[in-house]
Image (cartoon, rainbow, N blue to C red; front, side):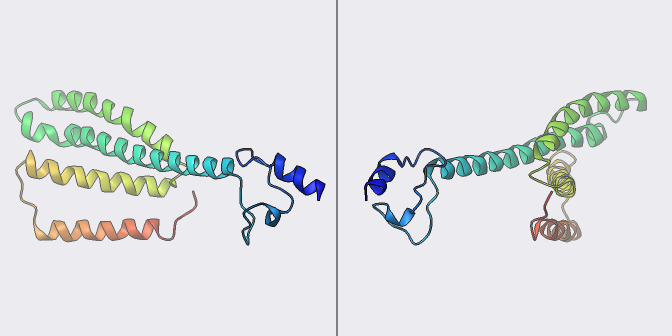
Length: 167
C-alpha cells in the first residue's frame, strides 16, 4: 500500500516514462494504459508540423508553378515581338525564381510524400495554374474536353494517394 502511494505521488503526466506500473490503480482508471500527456503533446506537435510541412510544400509548388507558367507561356502574350534569344533569356530568368521555390518545396515534402506523390502534386499544380493563366491572360476558352482531361488527372491523383504510399 505504501509503494502504491509513493508511485501515485511520483507520477507526473508531463514527463515521458513516468507512467505508474499499474495504471488501473491511478485515481482515474481506464481499461487501457494511458500515455503521458507529454507523449500526446509530442505526437500532436509532430503531426501538426507534418501537416504544416505538407501545406507549405503544396503552397511552394503552387507559387513555383506560377513562375514556371509565366516563364514558359508569358512570352506568347507579352513578348511576341521579341527575338527568340530574348524570350529565352527572359524565360530563364523567370525560371530561376521557379527553381528557387520548387527545390525547397521538394526537399521539405520528401519523406512526408514519396517522390511519385511530389511529382503528381507538382503536375496538378501546373495544370491548375495554367488553366487560370490560359483563361485570364491568354483569354482562351476552357472547353469541356479540357475539363474531362483535368478530371482524369484528378482521378490519377486519387489513385496515387490511396492507399497512402510509404515514402
